[in-house]
Image 1: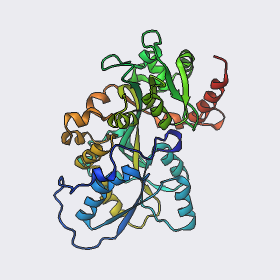
Image 2: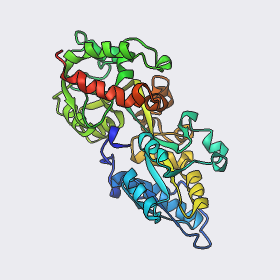
Image 3: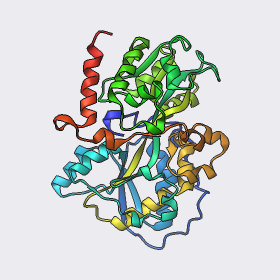
Length: 367
């Protein structure tokens, strides 16, 4: 994800020691010769540790292609490599806003989807087949709540419930600062707009709903780490933040859980750096890592939703319960429409720019 909606890169569920394994889920034929290397730029931490174990090492063993990791995959670093003519990264693991920025600056290769295994690709929703990014790991804005305030079954089960301060008493926290755009879709969901009819957004209706929310919010958080800390400590009871971050806190023993109804989903993606030297190896890697078994193994260690529906064949009911792309949860959620947010509107500005500026002005108005 880009800085506009970044959750910690990445304090995730299990540390390296807990994720090391002998990769028994693959039948790997030893590679016969050195086939060169590729460099994957990601966000480090336990997320990359898990990827090494379930993606990079098995891919090396199967193909003879070495995988090195580096990062973080910031657009400025990709541009610096392009400007110097020394392209050292081949693949990025990042979000669509960052990908759009880099694509607009001619820093990425379009993905040739004819080189992706059709069966594996067919298991990934078409909304994740972006020209410059193939979605592989899903995050989302969800209702994250304190379980001491709301025991199982008593939590708000919709955004309309979150907006209902009389029936669901307690402090709320919503995002502001850090470039996070206003959650207008969530405001519309609270106002009764069905998720399948969310776009194009009814802007004025959304802002009227935001006006009704304002008195319930006791804290406008600056980043998702702060949001999870607030709800974990009971300083707020309900939060609109990254659901998988809430699952991390839950697994670590915090009194936190996630309600998925009305969630706004978005992907982290594989993207190809323009000018890489081993493009054939890049496509071999992409075909390997989108396999359902591989994604399932990553999901066991990193509680973000796998993009491949096939992954759930290899996950237990308990493992699938805390993943936002669980087929049961997908029915209740919707995909963030990047095309709408990125569309150029009045004055040559994008919808994101216009609504973020309006958000800043709205925050200083008297409620």
